[in-house]
Amino acid sequence: MIEAGSGVWAVLAIGMLLGFKHATDADHVVAVATFASENGNAWRGLWVGASWGLGHTTPLLALGIVILVLKEALLDRYEAIAPVLEFGVGVMLVFLGAQVFYNLRRGSLHLHEHAHEGQMHVHVHSTHREGSEPGNGNGLHDILRPQFRLKSYGVGMVHGLAGSAAVMLVLLPQIEVFWVGLGYLVLFGVGTVASMSVITIILGVPFAVMSHAQPWYRAIAGIAGAASLLFGVALMTEIATGVSVIPF
Image 1 (cartoon, rainbow, N blue to C red):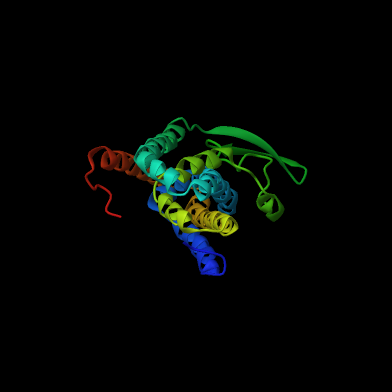
Image 2: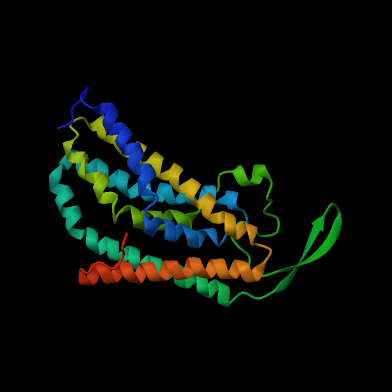
C-alpha cells in the first residue's frame, strides 16, 4: 500500500505523466481529428481539446473517488464491463467518421455579405466550420477566450470510461491516503487536458492552412473521417472476435 510520506510525490508525478501519455492513444487522436475539421483556425483546437479532456476527466474522477473508498471491489466490476464500454467507443468513432462525410456531402456554395471597415463585400462560402462563421472574430482575444465545446466534452466522457484509462485506475486501490489518491486523479486529468489541447492544435494546422483551398480541405477532412470509420470498425471487430486487428 502507498502511504503518506512513502512515494507520494512519485505517485503524483505518475498521475501527471499518465495523463500526458493517455491523450495520445490512437482512438483519442482519431476522434479529435474529426473535430479539427470543423474549425477554421488551428488555435481554436485549444478549447476543443480542453473540452475533450474535461469530459474525459469527469467520469474518471467520479469513478476513481469511489474506487479509493471501496478499493478492489469496484475495480473488479469495472474491469468486467470495460470491454462493453470500449465497444461503445468503436460505435462512436464510426458515427464521428460518418458525420464528417455527411457534412462534406451536403456542402454547397452560397454567398454571404460582410462589412469590412465600413465597406460591404460579398464572399463565397462552403459549409461553415465550427468557429469560422461570420462575426466570430479570429483575433487573439477571440481565440483565447474560453469556449466550452459540448460535443467534445461528450466524446471525452465516452472515452473516459473505456480503454486504457483502466491502467490508471489499477493503482488506486494501492493508495492508502485518500488525498494522495485524489491528487493523483486530478493531476491525471490536468495532464490529459493539457496534452489533448496541444494535440488538437497540431491536428488543426493542415485544416487551417487549406481552409481557403476547398479541394484540399475536403481531401484532408475525408482522410480524418475515413480514419475514424476504419478505426471504429477495427476496434469493434477486435472486441467482438477477440482477434487482434489494430497493430498498435
